Length: 459
Image (spheres, rainbow, N blue to C red):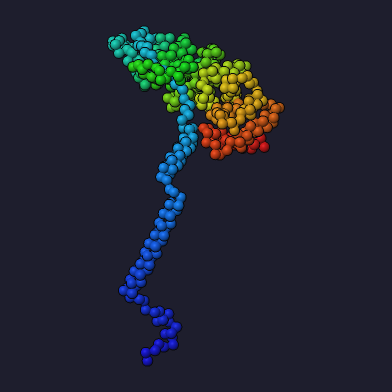
């Protein structure tokens, strides 16, 4: 009766054997742990005795091990230093402004005799000024800040010389930020306002001139001769005068941009003066303190470029490029000068190409006039030479790219492309990936990238 029935034989639950008790299970686990412990103890004893026999047989010397370790440390340190050598190369940047001079006075004492304020549109305000002449200039400043002075100029159709020079000086030398910005807006609105016949809406007897703008730039501390500015930074005598341009420099740039848009009925600047202003504006791009003004610097640059007529531009472009090449140090600042010129039109491309050519001419210290001579000099560089200066080669490479990319090659275009690709291929293949010399990897990667884009564009 105790035997299982037939259907119970087929039931898996009934056929499952009983699990061992916790006591039996614990004893089996403890036994397995003991076996593993004994095994690893025997193994450690064997390894220790074997290593001891090997040390005795080889005659172990701790001094030799210390020498070997120190040698490896020196080699590792040398390798790391070679890898980080590029970080020691100075970045682009040149101090364009030194210490400021004392700003001239901008006071105006002729408010009561101001013809602009005697206009009928201003009503009885002139009587208020007569009764309180001490507040006369403050009242005029309030009109300037609230843009009423500009409105009066458009209503009356003229601005007398005394008011024009007073507003101009406030723009250039006032330490009041709101006042100098309002003065800049006044002048830009007056200069750029024209009717349908392209005639000015406001008659001016006095215009801002080149000499006044250069005097302001000198007061700001602009270094017109920058040939020794880099070497004399550490030797300069410290003074209490502030260093770098004041905030008025932004208004200076904006009014230059506005003045260059006027060529009729009279031009404010001559051709040579416009060339010098273009050099100065491009030179501003080298000062890292002026990075926040790059937008208005670029706008002013394009305004000056458009100032020249078609007949004037070719000659002026070469003059500007040569002047900038002499002002720019022979380092990474060369690439910054070229890169700051936005290639938005044909003239910008031409200027960028000419500047690159003039910089290459000064770098090579030989006379190179066309792409063949430039490429021949580049191809003569032996990148496998241990004394090869890859930093200079990188500068040459980028300058040559800018010159060839924006220069009209004419019928010899394919010859130039073939020579150019051959040089790029040499740089990208002959410089190995294990070459840790400074700028070697930059030259190889840059050459590979230019080669790929050149082949794709020419194909």
